[in-house]
Image (cartoon, rainbow, N blue to C red; front, side, top):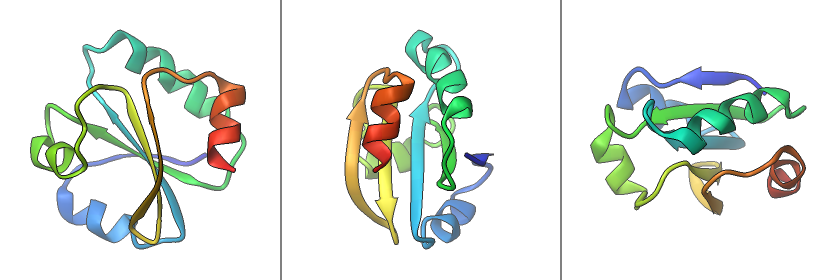
Length: 98
């Protein structure tokens, strides 16, 4: 998985136009978010991951209705197809991405 740390909202709008994108809404202070990082790095997939810091991108987090973190949102051509709230292990994440 290629992991992209979001730097501005314009980049986000461009990146989500691709086929499949996994958006990881997280915060640097969040324990379960810190646990999820290494899991994302271990998963073998051609899906890109966009990491969105909810403290930095509050409007984007609100737009996607993120109430708890970590929240993973799987997008296809910009449309949400799946969502997972909370920590997820490698096997369940691989199943989630199918």
